Amino acid sequence: MRPGPAPSRRLVRVLEVDPDLGQSLEGPDLAEATRQTVGTLEVVEPGLWRPRTVHEGKVLYGGLVFEGLIVRELSLGTAVSAELLGAGDVVVPRDADQVVPFVPSEMGWRVLEPARIAWLDAPFAVAARRWPHLGVALLQRAQRRADRLAVTQAIAQLTRIDDRVLALFWHLAERWGRVTTGGVVLPLRLTHKAIARLIGAQRPSVTTALTGLERKGLVSRREDGAWVLGVPTEPMIDGALAPPPDALVELAD
Image 1 (spheres, one colour):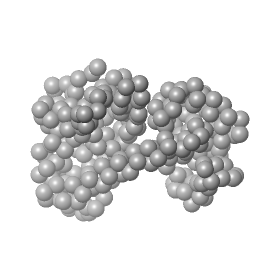
Image 2: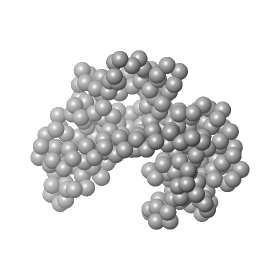
Image 3: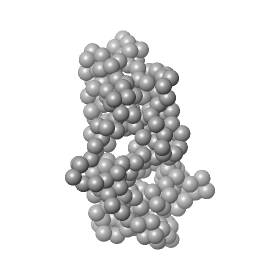
């Protein structure tokens, strides 16, 4: 498993790589905050990985992912749950991410697509004191991550596996999907095993569900590994309607 960032550190201007974090600032404040708000850059190639610890330093506020795709897995006995993280998500130091000690479990991280992370420490704290909206924005990111995880947990409670798969794909499409003439493209190369862990199912059941969804024209896979979602013309998930047209317009923007 890879350790944290290499000893040699490279700084990155946080608001340059993630301008949305400073969207509440304007004019001179935005320019000055952009100069002062820096983080320590970590570049991670696909494979096993683990976040830094508080004791390793330079991680007071955690790490802000601004590029790439990471999966966080929690193993409890033979069961494994998963969470996808990407640009805009905040990763806390691994020793601040402890699970309840009475339940024996293991945490694992894997980078699926090359990732770039800005670890935030004292310089961000100084900037957040001067521009409190930066700290607020970071808290909002953490809340959105918790909300998405709650939706994924609810999806895992659906009875039918094909409903879970379809609901997961549309949930991920809210963030990563793009509308094309051939359907909504989800450019995530998720394996059947990864999908199974995201929805709390077994891989063979996911394979069977995907076969059925492909037969109905609701899901297909491109040669590059991306998934394409066909827009349903009737209720698709336990009576829930298809995504409304205005939602698809937002994806196209």
